[in-house]
Image (cartoon, rainbow, N blue to C red; front, side):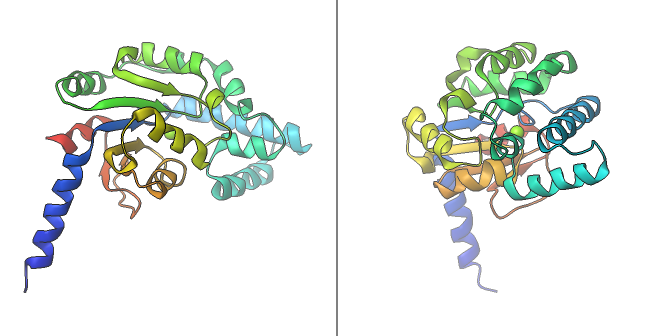
Length: 229
Ligand SMILES: [Mg+2]
């Protein structure tokens, strides 16, 4: 078997890693995992709001309909925006659940950012969440704000993910080329597909499944550091 193409592939993967100057992180589901209890509460709230807005009953049929919409739009914020609500609608309701009461700081994630501070890589956050809540979540997770060059939230972008506008803003704020950015997220069609579309490198976290849109896939967010080691 000719080993040439394989060698070329490894070489180019290494070259790609060397190119990374900036890591942009999604927040919810990426820098922390919702507990099963939080996920349950979030789903109940999604159904309640959706049923109210569409004048339907809160039942399994309506929930199925919501899930079909999610499969199409890949974003809870986008579902409510499609019903004529403001782009912040979902997160403004979500944040009333006091998400931080469900969260605990995670040692591995905190350590990862400490290790990152020794590397020549800058960081940013791009989330569909709102700024005040983002800061609360980071404080609860004991992830210092000073790590991030920018925090891009729903208030500053025209439309929720996977809309490309916010991802273009990431390139602008990072002050590097799209291919020098590693975008880290937990959702393939919401985070990775648009990032890849603009030429960013991508990492899918909290997953064991491989996707063509993900350059790297890791079972834990702290594994992202392995890209640089
Ligand atoms: Mg997420």
